[in-house]
Length: 281
Length: 298
Image (cartoon, rainbow over all chains, first blue to last red; front, side, top):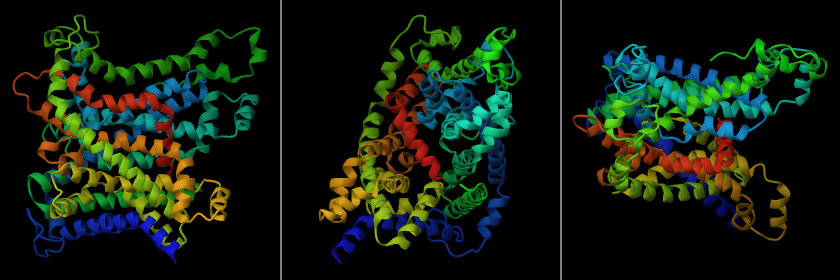
């Protein structure tokens, strides 16, 4: 009897926090999205009106479009660079931990710092542009390209994460497979493409979903690098929520936008769950 | 990026037969992976180098020379300004990070242990699944009610409020990490403690926790970098006088009128990133282990 009580005490922090804080505040936010709340949470029920307004808000639709561009470029670039680095390190036995330290360090740098450094590198006056002449490095002032500049900075931070995940999975493959492939005279690149990378598809799926979820959340990087500009070119949903919560003081609309973010993450988690079952890991 | 396709082929073939007459590109191909890695390393280190070099230059030198060049006449002026401006932020960051890391790690260990071994099996499993979900949901979903809750408790806009927010938002991850770790402990260890008459709590504090110190270090490392580098929680919950370094840093960069002092900005950036980077470079393997065990759970 006393033991059960003790166990209950151990579980209590997690239980209270998950139920009250996570579930409670989430339900509260979703509830607020159906009200006309402005600065204070005291609006009345307006049904789906906030969602209708949200999707008629050009700043929101622009932010969703920008997110699509960002997520595509960021996930693709991080995956390609990360997998390439993992394969190279998998081949290269010497100084592996030194190489890994170099490729993974951006992950320990805060997003605001990363954003500012890349803003500087891509600055038309003092950045890379001034080095190579007018070769098109002025991405940040170009509304069509600015979001890809942010994606480049994001990938600089995340490629190392992909590398670490994929490299750990590659190391776990039975060495017999490599030996057999080498004996059969299969070229190295073929061995990776047809044999080894399919073996680590679980890790590839996990890395892709982690990146996609990180993309949906991205906020500080944009604040430091472009603050949404030029125009709405790098406005993102997470930033939209913050602006309408704390600057524009429109809690109802911000909650509707936050709920859309929740739906996006829920969709990704469902895909993750289905993929894990399909991959069988 | 170019795939190392045909040129690396030679290294994959049985070496013995080829050794007598090496194909013309064999030497080149052996060094290609290293060359590619070196190129990539240079690209990855570029931002760090630019920050370091820029922070040691005068504005005059920044305008005249290339940003890739080392400082020809190094000066600590930019650093003096950056350190002066960011010192309050540094102190706040320490005051927020240290208690938040310790608390979230301890609570994570407690609840991870309970979820791994308690007799309330079904509820434990349900709770663990909820925690995994919670770890992935964007903070924006919790922010406004959390602000109201902390304001109601009189903690909004204080260091304690920021610490509490970090502990709560971090608990999902730390609990999942510890639960995964505890489930891999040898069961004999726990049984032996039980035979000796140790209860649930006693087993945790005198047997499980002491053998889990490496895991504690891993979790603390992850939490330290995460909380130090946080921007949103500090911005929303800490209040104007208690802004952590990251928030103060963006204010410094954003509010300079006229010509931007790039050298001071670079020094501030490096100063803000310094502690996590030092911790990372000295703890490489542990940090990677933590990130991996966190990633696998997702």
